[in-house]
Length: 424
Image (cartoon, rainbow, N blue to C red; front, side, top):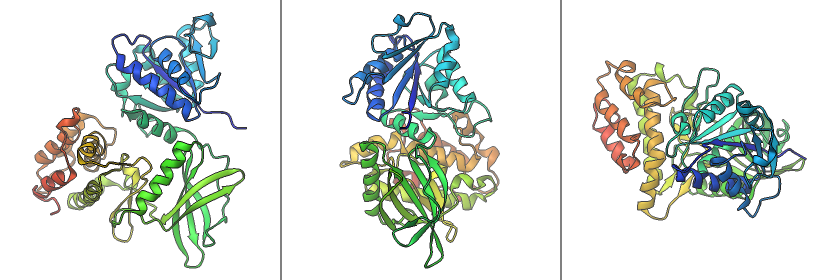
């Protein structure tokens, strides 16, 4: 039997002035237990007490789901909602025990102690998710890299769904073993190798033995009903779309091997993502044409009132034959019935991410900071491009206040078309 995943939740010991953090921590505790995770925390008050209290609100809760690692020698000092109290007697050094005992870390607000735990987590190579909510270090550290030892920045989260998603992405693989090579899928495809692993999702390269062509297969290991339903919904949604920059599902089904159930989809093979392209070596007209094609795909999704919710270089594949972008991995997608609700959420997610993407494509930097927008002309110049107008557009797309961001991708596309040198 596998050990259950332990999620460390760190944050403010006193949330009297931050009621939003207390409420968020309680909802997170409930959601974590429902996803099958155990909670590790400092065992005291504030965020720590709220997340443990929330865990007990879940119908999935069992005794032992909350673990408190205390700084003192008295286990009785734990809050009333801690199931397992571990008295260390080492004071602030207990922060390292919290981090080392966690498979992934979620930070909510917090002061110097939380900052030290974030730094320790980074040094130990732990996945870190920082919630951007009210005051505290988590809001300041979201989206940042502390140094060069880890390429991927601290995850940026604004909602419970964001946190749950990022936990899955930042965990080591929970699949007991990869699908063996030479396994036959659908009587047609042969498994060649596994090239990407993200917790309960795995990506494989397949070979069609009849036509000698490569294909890609994404699998989802069944861990919870919520994840399973979301993956099935992704399959149905992608099948309903018809656009050259959205993957075509060639096959889907379920695979049961070694006691592990996997749902899978097979799509065309595109081995290169935008994150692997040397964007700084691309000519500006070619780069802007590529971005506009991605934007055109967002306009298509906008017509359908669908949010991708994870637009980033690694999820944009490049068709090696045409050079066109392919928007991949719709696992986090969300569809809306009315335009107003879609626009409200689009400003908060896809619009912001597309602003970051344009900044990345121009500067080659994805560790987003507002000051990077000022550097556009330093990275790109002499191509008859109005970088001042592009800089102003990016500022609006990533404005800290979502309501100040553009309301639609169609409007952004129209602005770019009006700028000198942009694809029309």
